[in-house]
Structures are given as structure tokens and as C-alpha cells.
Image 1 (tube, rainbow, N blue to C red):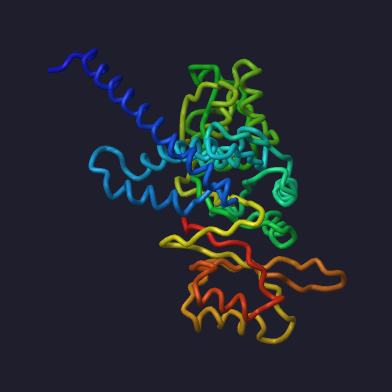
Image 2: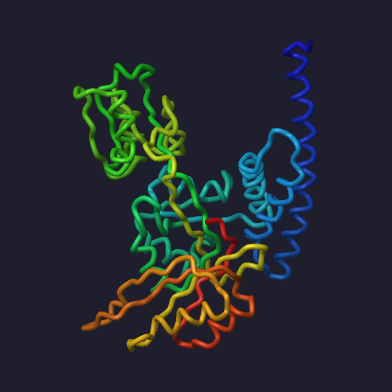
Length: 355
């Protein structure tokens, strides 16, 4: 039987080999970046990253499943992109929010992150080119759609680069190592609602529950005040150095938010499985919506989402429709629908389908 120090020496040897291989990979990445810069092509390619992870998953014969492979290689991809071209990413703040966590899961620890106060500001920064990418929430499977994001898609000239479904998992963090010492718990109202069972199991009537504007602020307050704790995101606890006592305390394990990655003038290449989003401004006439949707059915295109939003035209109750469907912009049936409806359809993006 091998001794502990012998096993650790093996791990050190593997780490040395990994570092050497990663440095060799980055040399190639840098050459790719120089070539892309000459050709003025796009650095971020979600479909290429997905194809790499798909390939590695089929080759893995050890302990690493797809989730583990994706977690490791998304960070490698992010470092690689920053070597090719440093990225500036804005997101719906504050720091430590779930949107921040979603952004960092795709752009890694090396990117420059800019938290913004509202969704409109994220769209403005992307549209004007002040940042390369923006990250915003679009819908939650428990709470529904984010109306402001849909309104901005209708109003601003940006494209959807990628979608990112992320489980919303709350952490319970505190400087206290014993829950019996906790007298105050800070969090956002929705977090209290979604962690009700945990709170009932662990805390009695003597504990105060104080609602604050964000789970990030909750973590900051728990750090500053003795005998207190926060229900917050994992990244907020990490950001403020607040020890996590319990992870995944939410009542529902099926709570997922879908985020969008936005950019200006961006069209992804096709992958094996794509989704397209469009905005439809349909004529105000009987059967207009039915006739338009029939065009998808006739071409065998599967619709995955349709949502209406007010067009905000004075003295009018007209609506725009945000429509998601399977397929890529360069697929002939999709192009037919878009090209045959000039002035009616606005293309918002084709991207790898993840949900």
C-alpha cells in the first residue's frame, strides 16, 4: 500500500505535466489570436467550445463526467480568450450577484468585470461598444420572464451570443461556526421565500430575518455584524471572505435562471444543435399571428418560446412578439421565414441551444 507522501508526489508530478501542457496550449492559442486579429474575426466561439466539451465527454473513461469536464475547461477557455484578446464584460450587478456568477462561469477569473445598476445600462454599454459582452437574466423557471430584458431586446441593437441556464443555489454563510449563536439573518426577500424549509428546520422565533436589496449586501452585512448570517450566492460569500456553513439550502432543486450573453454585431457559426431568437412586429389584423406562426409549422421549425410585450406606441395597444425556435440563421427554412418578412422580423441571434 502506497504511503500518503508517495501519492502526493504522484499528484505533484501530474500537476507539473498539466502545467507544461497548458503552457504549450497557450502558445497555440496566442498564434490563433494573432491570426484572428489579422482577419478581424471573433474571439468568443460558444459553438466551438461546446464541440470540444462534447468530444472530451465521449473520450473520458475515468471519474470526470460532463459537469466536471465543463467546469475545468470553461476556465481554460476563458484564460485562452484573454490571451487571444483581453475581454471586458459588464453584467447586472451588484458584485456577488447570480448574474456575476453566471458571467464568471463563462468568462473566468481573468476577465475585467463591470457591475451595472440596471439591465438598460448593460444593453447601453454593449450597444455603444464600451464593453465587448454583457450578461443579463432573461427568465427563471419559478418566477417567470424578466420583462426589462425582453423590452431592451425590442429596443436596443444588440445580438444574443449565447444562453446560459444556471441552477440558483443559495449558501448560508456566517462568521459564527454554530447556528445557535446566530441572532440575525440577512437576505433578499425572494431568497427567504425560496429557503423557507431550511430556515424553519434550523431557526426559531428568536432569530430576526432582515430583508436587504441584494444577497451581496446580505453577505457584506453578515461580515460586519456579530451573531449574524447571510443567505447569498456562493460567489458573494467568496467575494467577502464569509465562511459557508451550508450549501444548496434552497427548497427546490429545480430552480434555474436562464441568462443571456450579449454582444454587438455578432453571428455564431452553426453547431450541431442551435436556437434562434427573433422579434416579430406583426400587422394588426385578424389572423396575423396565426398566419405568421403557420410559416414555422409548414417548414418543420419547432417553436420553443413565444412571449408578447407592449409595443409602447402612443394611444395604441399593439404588441411585439419575442420568439425562440430550433435552428440556425443560416438554415434554409429559417432564412426563408426571416427573408420573407422584411420589416416584420428582427433577427436577435443564433446560438448553441442549452435549454
